Length: 579
Image 1: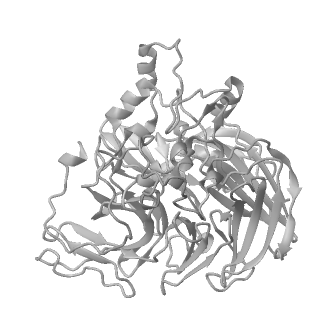
Image 2: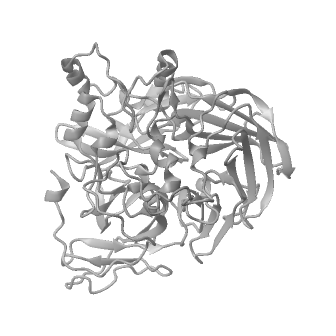
Image 3: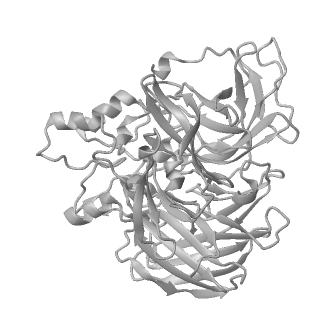
């Protein structure tokens, strides 16, 4: 079923709240996740975003740092802060003599900041995925990636190509360059295919891989699982004869010192719901979890399955299979953790997102905070050519414009006969709204803007407040046209107060919260953020430490490296790990 034939017949409802600050972009026939033909107005040598340096994403690591190097300490590193900050992200735009076309395709580079008794070390190594090893051997592109087409093998016939369509393990890139997560005391690098790589948290050596599809029926999963006290949960897509399903995958925590593979051997699906549109399953980068529910946010950015088959036969990038249906609604599917079945469904005006900030239950409502974009144009912005030419693209900042938004889902709404006659949300302290839109059957939710800053890679006090009512989150700036686009941000969701930290020509990464010993307040701890510097200062990386309460700098460690250091994406802090 095509989304255009499944359009909800919703009656007139109240106008949506103005949660964005942008002017409309020129209409496009489709999402356009392809290298743009035109990138905007030529500014004749003037820089559209003079304070933003996109080249930090385009650097290629030329020399791994296998043995840890010592950093220059400025300020003070808290002596109670001991452990490893592990990071993952794009490490090289080069594939031998070829070049990747999209940031998502770049070879994964792992980083480690070792912190012990007031001192810090740094090292970095490439993830030894199978595709990376093939690239190094062939010195060229060997597998078609998300946005980059490899040269087809001339020895492979059209019939062989058709055969590979039905083999999800064939001719697929296992490059895992987005995130890194713990499974018990083991660390794994993630992408959105179900192949994860075990990484040594001290040496950054790649120690093997696990294909989750060998243990449970999923063909992909999000790169942001949730780590809880009883194990790890993730959202994947299962394929059955009746069509695709969105499934919650549970990796139970080991209760003994037996074979660590048992964590995967005991993997199981604990909840599922049919994809909203069987031929157009929605793309999702993360999901929500609370004590009682799983929250699946199905946005109208879809993988068009017939096109996926065609693209696979032609060896074309998967990006061409994504379709954006702007006239559809975003759907919140709430699944019961008790039954594993769909419990509630809500709708919102179409929006695109990558990251959910947090979610929690309160007084018969579910609160879901999301970094929201008007549409998926920001994926276009991450093409290598788009980054190279961003300073001449006056639309670039608009394409990347997003805001953190709070949605509130009423689980026990009062019954009303009139459409849009009353706000169904009875929760204090929020301006979010919800209305019936077809006489008591479907509910449309309207978001509340949490701040007027573009926020990305959001983090919270995760270990204590995942799925619970919380107050603070931390993020990096997503506004490339800001005076300080390299800002780290702290948002108070109750007062809407924002605090920022920035330094000229410095670009911090995802802020990770670490609680201080015996902390009482939610923000009693520190923020860790890796830093790179722009312009010609390429061989320079650092670790920034902020007081999470005051958002003032406590200390930092800076390193001079033998080669360029690119900006990374996501990471994890492992406390009390040997240096």
